Length: 324
Image (cartoon, rainbow, N blue to C red; front, side, top):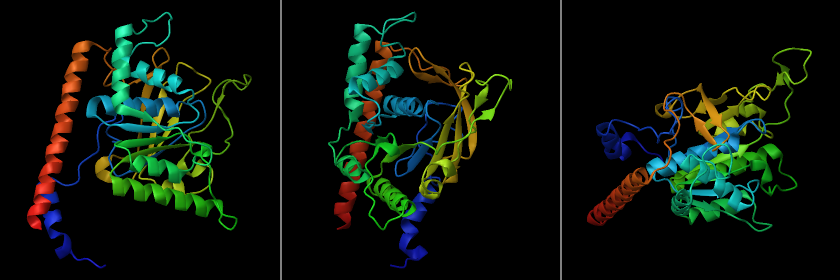
């Protein structure tokens, strides 16, 4: 069907009146927000060398969005097992205190109760049987879920159904097209974590010390399989740090943003706190330590947000019935 401006004039006018396309939701990191925001109807590739912190960074993003914007998440992460381990890591990020005893303040039993209640409403974990661990099954489960976002971590743990006459490039293109179609149809966001192909180390310090080497920052073209990764994704992030200097910051490289109103190519630095798994932004500072009053206020904000969404949906339904 061919359309002219006349076909879309009303929604185009409404878009003009509302000020144009809006940015997505804040990541919770003020240093990152000028470059990247999380918007429904898009998907984001997150890449990086193993042990550079991709999964931990995405965990921080989903906790921030769940806490501040009420996002609900469906997580498929077969490397983060048992589920209790992953849940404990999310609880640490949310509370801001260690789950385990140690030199730093440990979360209290009251903290544990509130963290469990928060995660129970905002996070679901997807466990798949053998034969189901493929992109089709994940998207089918996500379509029937009330989640706002999905995490697939990592791509290489999926079972890939590639026919005998289908090249890897063709298969990846078709699979990523499924994800693109899914997020646009269901208005959800997907974080897809994928490892780059094997990369060569480079010298960063004393040439006589073998440990003074690191990896270059991978690009989406380095992700194993196909250039489709950068061509078909809406956003591309890379998590990178120097393994030879554990005190160095983690760099978040924004390597692609499809729509200019939602960000731009750039880089920010975050520090990592191993005691609670939080990434810390120098501009916004660490997440505030948990307290009951803050929890109650944010819970009320989420209730108000859901009530607004319900009222909006009811208004749209009434308008649809009126036009009939």
